[in-house]
Each structure stands twice: as C-alpha cells, then as structure tokens.
Length: 224
Image (cartoon, rainbow, N blue to C red):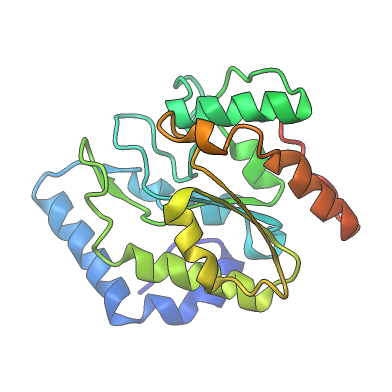
C-alpha cells in the first residue's frame, strides 16, 4: 500500500503498512466514505502530524486521544485547530498553563503547527473520527498503528520528552523505554480534570530544561 506520509516516517513504519490491521483500517475508511459518512480530518491531513514533524526532528511527544469531531476543527495535530477556529476547552486550558508556567500571553490562534515544526510531535491515538461521533474510530485498528509509532520512537531515538496527560495517555507509558527517554505525567487539560493536577504541572518549562540538559534547543512554546 502506498501511504502518503513523510519519507523518513515511511521508512521507519514501512512494515506496519503491510500488516493486516492496517489494511483493515484503510478498508474501513473506504467503506464509510462510500456510504457517505463524513470523516475528520480530511484525507490529506490524516498524517499531518507526521508530515509536520519528520521522524528525525522528533524531540517532544504529546499524546492525544481522538481528533476533534466538529466541522473544520481537526487537522491532524492533537489538541490543535486551524487558524480562525476558536481554541477548544482543553486547548484553552493548555494556554492557561502556558501563561502561568512561562508567562506567554494567551494566544489568539489554536493552530499548533509552530510547535510541530520545532519537533513537538502531536499524535492522536486515533487518526480519524466520524463527524459528530467522538471515539467512533477508536476500535478500527488505529491504536495498533499509533502504538507502533510510539514504540519506534522509543526504540530508535534518544532523549525524547513524552508528555502524558490523563489516564488514556499514561496507559501508553509501558511502550516507552524510560532508560532512554523522559516521561512527564499530569492530569488531562480537559475542564473536567485540569484542576486535578494539569494546572501547575509546569510541563513546558520542564520540557525545555530536559532539552537544554541535552544541549538541544528549547521549544518556543508561543504558537503565534
């Protein structure tokens, strides 16, 4: 199967694209489209996180769960929305913590492409969703693929900072070799849980300290 994805990722993940589960994902999406179902993000943006953050540039990983299921929101980067779309509640809370941690003024854009271009890999566990139906593609095989992605980063890279927000992301900790990488955990930034340990986690300054310790450039966390 010729998957259109950034070349370095394509090489690292080549074996996954030939496995039965991946063929099933592709087949499932084709059937849903043929039935007139609306799927987010658009096909050209399903692998946007990979295209915006090539494998050799990955320095930080933020794990999300599911793409946004509202019209015009999902563009293939977890927590991010395109320019002109108001930041959803979890992202608004991320911005509050950013302001508290680093003094960055609350951004007006919800587009995190600037993070991605600096090596912050914004990966959702599911790469697609049916319009208006959260978690509708959570069981079609995407988790097998994104688990393999996390394992590949863990096995082939060194010193990556993984930010695991909420129980769902923290369940992926078992895929990460912590003798080679750094793991920072906090509550999910959702309004339901942000007050239980996301606010005050200072993950943005802590990430930069870990990068600097490795003589790597810190992330400019201002998305504007």
